[in-house]
Length: 349
Image (tube, rainbow, N blue to C red; front, side, top):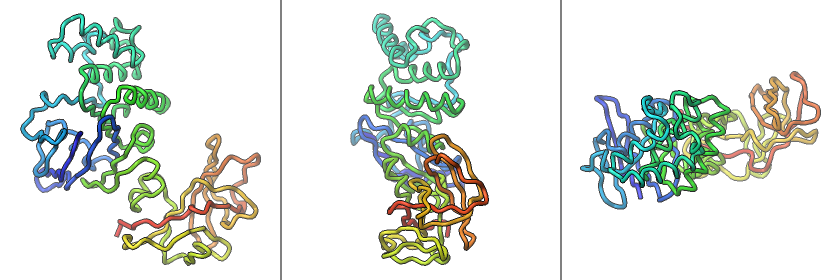
C-alpha cells in the first residue's frame, strides 16, 4: 500500500535522511527503530505530508502523494504528547475528527461508542479527560486517531511518557487492538522492546540511513552489524584478532574456552567480527566456556551473569535461574548452544 522510494532530506548541510526505501503492506505494523536524532520523526513528517523530501517519492497504491496535502491523505498521526482537548470530555475528544468529516450525529454516536468499546473506555465517555490516568489518556488519544478510519496510522513515541509497567501493559493491548482492526501502522520508537513487541517488521535506522529491515525474530537472531548488535544490547562482540577460529571445533577464546560456530564468515561481510549471543547458555560443569564470575543480576526466571575469561575478555550471558546462584569471584562453566556465535559486519571502521 505505502511505498517510500529513495527519500532524502537535508536541513542546510545536515543530511537527515539518505535514500530511504521500504514498503508497508495492508494491515502490516512496521516499527521504525533507532536512536534519537537518526531521522525517524523526520521520515514520519514526510510521510504525513508535513515536510517535503529533497528527493524521492511517497506513493499509496502506486499513486504519488507529492502534491496531496496532509489533510487529504487520510493518515492518522498520534504523538507522545497526546494533545487532548481539555475542554472536551472523552466522547467529545473522540468525536472531534468525525465532526470535521461532517458525519451525521447518529453516525458519530455509533462510531465513537464502537471505538471507545475497542479501547476499553466506553464506560468513561462522559469523563473529563483531565481526570483520567496517563494510560487512560493514551487510550483516548488512540481512539481519537483511529475513529475516522485512517488508511494509515502513524504513532510517534506514543508510550514514551508512561512508566515501564503501564507501557508494557498498553503495548500488548495496542498490538491486539491494531491487529483486530487490521490497521496499517507505522510505529516510531527508540525502544527495542516496544518495537519487537508490537511490530510485524522492524526498520532500523541510524544517522539518516536504513541499515536493516526484517521481523523482530530475524533481526535479533541475525543483526547486520556491530552497531545494531550493541543497540539491541548484544555486547559479546569479539575481534577475530584475539581468538582462534576452527570451523570444525569452534571459536577458541582462551586455553580452556571454546564457543561453537558452524560456518566461515559469509562473503558479503568485509570486516568480520564474532557475536556471541547471551541467551541459550546454561550453567554446566561440562560446559566448554570457563570464566570468573564478576557480576550477578537476578531477573526472576533468568539470571544475568558477567564473566571474565583467562585472556581478559568480558562476556555477558542470561541463564535460567539455578537453585543455587553462584557467587561473584567463583569460576563457572557454561554450555552454549550450537548457534551461539555468528558472524557480523564491523561497521565501526
